[in-house]
Length: 200
Image 1: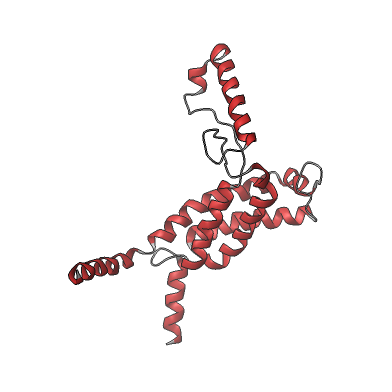
Image 2: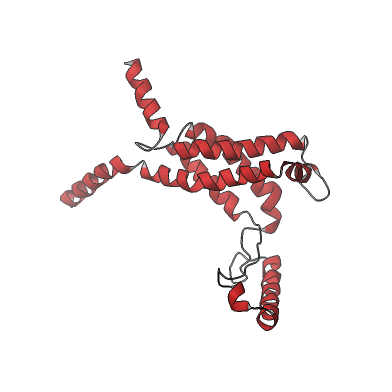
């Protein structure tokens, strides 16, 4: 038993050389998602600011132009910094706040699911109704449209716009807050090594 534990410990020690792969994977996954979200807000600045500020059909946030700049800048430039692994822990915090605001100010009322899936145990009444509407839409398209062409790129779905993605991104950013940019694969790692050498 002791020999088995020693083998296991030896394997873990060897794996530690590649521990930077996990934060690298998180960073590479998150960066384009965040950068695209920031770019979309900047590209449609007026519409985004109007939605942020309007209390009737939007979020009703104060200073909507400033909020748009902060949200878009955090997502776009934060995503860029995550991509290269620079200031990873520092950038994780405002990005986590952005994800929480998105989850609770925008998506909360829609429940958990991002895509309406009536068969899910997380499905709300709204999601079940969406399933009925989707079935009706498919039936109409099968009778009156070129259904095979329309679905050649994938199945039709109804967006539920729940908190699923925002909370998933929040958890990934939380992991990066604790792990940092990662060994060998981030600028943070090399800056830390250089600064450590300078101090000694």
